[in-house]
Length: 128
Image (cartoon, rainbow, N blue to C red; front, side, top):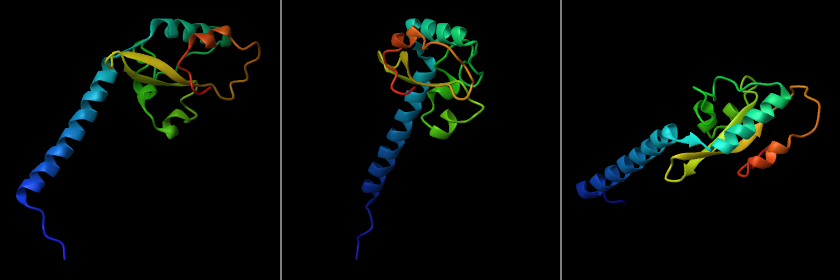
């Protein structure tokens, strides 16, 4: 038979849970205040211009690519057909003030031509 937790154990458990939630909230706030690496913004804009496409409003909020849905790690959001083209960012750089584009998805847009050399200017890209 298990002994019930003491009140001090309950306090420690609640304190730990509060700390975890608080830490995740701070990370989220910091990510929202982070900015995308300017060289990656130029590369992304050049790629989209060559392909004749535009960023969707769900992640390119106020001209900041790494915002909105670009900050979610949810695969269903990233792969949503209305979120096309889509990017995903990691904003954990330079004390959570700098974002890098880590994923780029452009699906079924019937584009032809050469692969833009500007893709090389996205050094943190892990998924294309």
